[in-house]
Length: 273
Image (cartoon, rainbow, N blue to C red; front, side):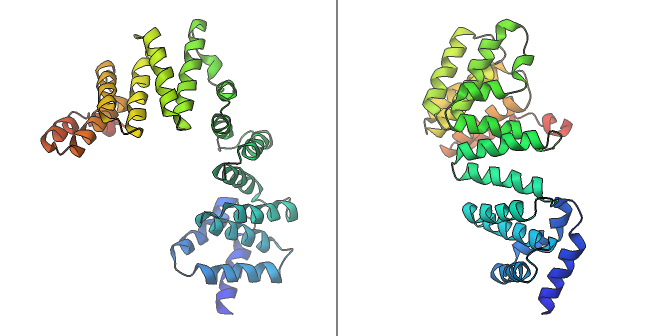
């Protein structure tokens, strides 16, 4: 009974605060080994106070526990109970957002897309980036045209003649993000061949290197990492190229060569950041 009263006391105190502060006292509970007991407490709160705000918080915390265990279907069941039973809860935005994330993790991209579109309309001033997830959904569904058109930055490119190039660049990146590495490489190589001096080419070279690395083709990866770092003047992308080549040299047991590569990393980038 003491354990129950302790949790319920905190539920009561935190009911009227915003979602993140509501949940703050419980973040440490997930690090404990008493999750089954913790879930029993939440179940008891829901059973004994089904219409109270405490029940809404309990549903949410139970959903969080399911998320942690990668039981996304169970998590969404609890989240929908909140939305249906407590339509005015302060947890609403948090819950709707998490539902979309879980749909995406379940590869239910159509449902995820609907959730994120609804979120962007319902919460236009939200700090959460609905647009980013809408783009990810379209890319995962293979609709790269929609993914590119969704980007709010797409039409800010100048001059106008660069629009088609940027469109192809975004498509190459989208292909990489959905693990179509060979298609991404093929498109990126085509862009570089047509625009070798464009400032996007070194970034595409770096992406090609990453794609070859994913395909375990280290020799080809090293070639493109070297091309990328030679074209880049400075900054984190050039550092990444040095790191990747150093990493591959290290895996070949060439420790001295790895050290030489790592030494080329510009430390001032981190100091100024």
